[in-house]
Each structure stands twice: as C-alpha cells, then as structure tokens.
View 1 (tube, one colour):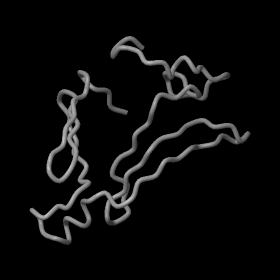
View 2 (cartoon, rainbow, N blue to C red):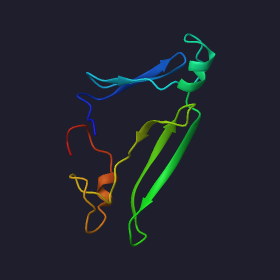
View 3 (cartoon, rainbow, N blue to C red):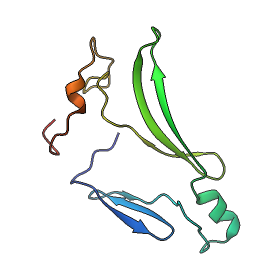
View 4 (tube, rainbow, N blue to C red):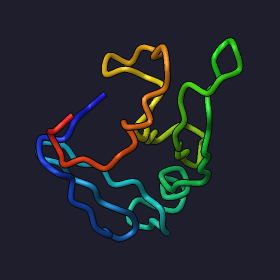
Amino acid sequence: MTAAARSPRGGRVDPGLLSAGGAWHFHPCIGEHTASGPELGRIRRCSRAELYRSLGPDGAPVSWGARLFNGRDEQMMTVLPPNPFLTDRQVIADAPDFGRLAASPPGTR
C-alpha cells in the first residue's frame, strides 16, 4: 500500500484524470485516447468499473473498494476506502471501529 508524501492533488488531463501526491502520480485513461493509435487507445481506456465487498468466513463484511479495468479486462487500479473492520496492521479487528470512517486531517492517524 502506498501513502502520499503530501495531500494528493488532482485534475483532468486529456484523455484522463491525474492524481499526484509527491513522488508518485497516476492518470487512468477515461476518455478517447488517439495519440497511440486506436488499438492501444482501446486497451488503455477504462472499460469497466466495479464496487465490491469482501465477506469473512462468518459472512460478515471485512473489506470493500472500487476497481477499474482496462480494455483487456486487466485490473488498472483499486481504491480502498477507510475500513472499520481492519486494524492499522491490516488484520481483522475483534470488533468494528466505525470511528475509522470519520474525517481526519492527513497524518493524524
């Protein structure tokens, strides 16, 4: 998992989105991409998005997120929101901590 060195900034870059957080950045292609030709543009463009939820052996939710897939149906990106079911070490908590969902300034957790 990668943490941003500073608060991420974002914007629109034709034909996609840009998010940057210090030494890293990414820009998933969401629009018509023609600079590399139509076939590569079709592959690069996000063709499918899904919201998912993972359940533990007892049927209780343990994780959720969003995934983007490219034109070859390869996973491009996963976004994992704060999770009340996991500890800071990514271990399933004994009891959910819904306080983890509260907004907090960067670097305070």
